[in-house]
Length: 204
Image (cartoon, rainbow, N blue to C red; front, side, top):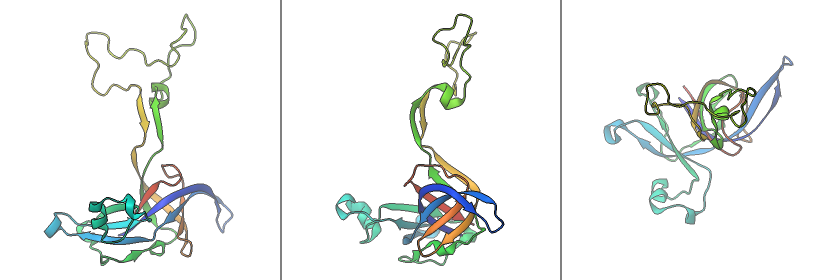
């Protein structure tokens, strides 16, 4: 199992050796430091905790600083391990982008862009009301939310509300290029999230 943390940069086009154009997302991946290893016998589950980025000491709580064991990372993340994924990494090891290679299939988890409070047309793709026949202010209204014999709003009714900022996992994305010197990876397609957001990359 290969894993690393990265920050999303931007999208661009990559020209393959055959001359085809591939849309890619640029991510700055690692390096990350292994801060702790959890074992099922002692902690109840198997995982590896890694630290990424740097942060000022005064911006970190005492408890979090203790978990970092003297180092000051901006982000701490855990990667769960299956019994077949027993890793040989140890606390203090550094993991960089060189563990990945072009052609690897990866699973990427990130937080999508927040869009604030949105109506049903934008949030759920409703068509809205008719534009004619006496309609004046109902073009983007949701319509009936109850009606008939029901005296309450059914559970799960699609309505207006806060949109975005969801944790999204995208599977089977392909690594197009790896720049070991600059810790940069090119991944085919779009990745959810804004520029600068944290991205979790896993390859099994």
